[in-house]
Image 1: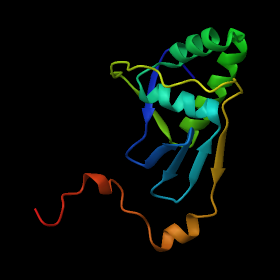
Image 2: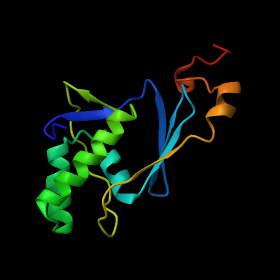
Image 3: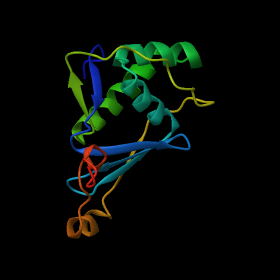
Image 4: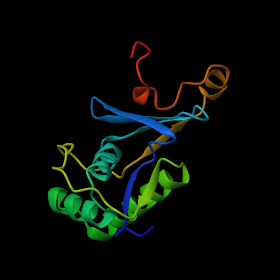
Length: 139
């Protein structure tokens, strides 16, 4: 992974929300859903806020006084996993950075949990992608 690149959530294929400090994501086409630990959620929010991988390494190392090589390794593995699952995509034009979200109390390596048990149910009645973008029927 190139940590100098910017990545954004793949909103064409996934829906996502942060609830009580935990990112929850769903692949709308195959029903796979995901959750992240607090550090993973922080990384997700920083990607959304326009930070590159190297920006995230700098922020994490500075905030928690962690070893640069360890954080780089953790982040590289995590971003690779997000990209392999098609949850993020590289972008050429990064968005302007916004303020970082609050940091969790402690650092741990970011973790992505994958759940496939809803795939069969969602195959029978799939959610409609981008439902929030639909025009109300009464207009």
